[in-house]
Image (cartoon, rainbow, N blue to C red; front, side, top):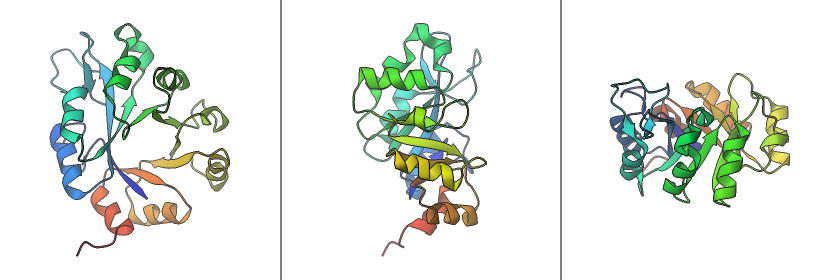
Length: 202
């Protein structure tokens, strides 16, 4: 089971910040998930909501520098078509390593990413206008925990998709998803998830 720290270790540090990513590394998560927008100058900034003028945000570059070689990074592009003039997809793809994953709710940015860089791992969120069949060219399908079903997991498996579920914070639910064959969960509490799926260190 992949344990993906949702916006970093957001249960004890401000989400989408360098301290949150550092803490996720310290607790041993497999990946951090970060949200990316472009600001008015075109800088790729890490924030869940659209950046506000005068706001202070980590940039994607410094986030990747912090994480490189220490933890995998899953980058979610937030409404990338809004920032088309800033070439957000192209620039993000250029920054990612082979170990990283690009995520989006929309299909076309991920299609663009795969055309620019064949072999890049992508995660297509499904159930909000994109079917599992529509995600078949991705590496993974992302399911909302409120919408994931055994049928949906089976359908993803049938077309060769890895199944990831977001956002799961209750240990009992984490365990149930693991038993259902889910490959990974996004969680605000990797500290609770890791003991369920890792042998204690000796």
